[in-house]
Length: 218
Image 1 (cartoon, one colour):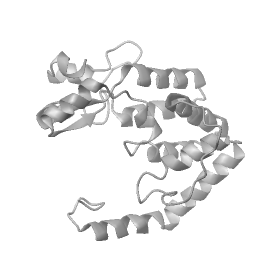
Image 2 (tube, one colour; image 1 turned 30 degrees about the vertical axis):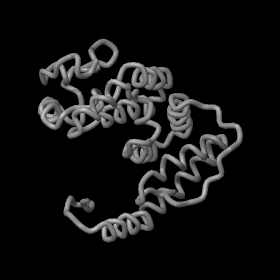
Image 3 (spheres, one colour; image 1 turned 135 degrees about the horizontal axis):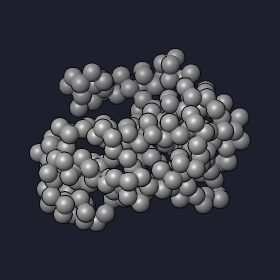
């Protein structure tokens, strides 16, 4: 295990560092802003519960370890939750808060904005066979975060919702070998190639340019 600077440390030391970060004035202040946001936009019980769960996935997250009461009327799909998050941020109209919240909401595998990406049985089987490698998003999560922020700041709800639909329908998670992942990262690691357009171009553009065989990702 590594610490926040990438150095190898015992688990107990790592845990204490994450706990210290969660209890820091910066993270606690963000937690209060999240609660204010949820209150001011009149978020439903389900969205309050979902958002707090999304911000509980790791020890350094603001709502980690806090008891949460699951509402009895849970009805929204993962895609619908992602859409509601974006609509609430557009309504709230605080660009700095939107950027900070989306950064927190795109950190961990189990969070809503990562779960909307399909994970097929084929990719699960590929992982079992290859073992050494990584699950990867053909369109990087960081690119999607910045694209959604662009639409939120412009209050362009239509494009934001279409992009979420696009992510859920067209951008699966793909298991790449270490070598394949290295080839893709040489093309672009956290963004898409210059000039790429999600409405007209292939979501696998990085893979195509890296020479990854089509049967790996389709």
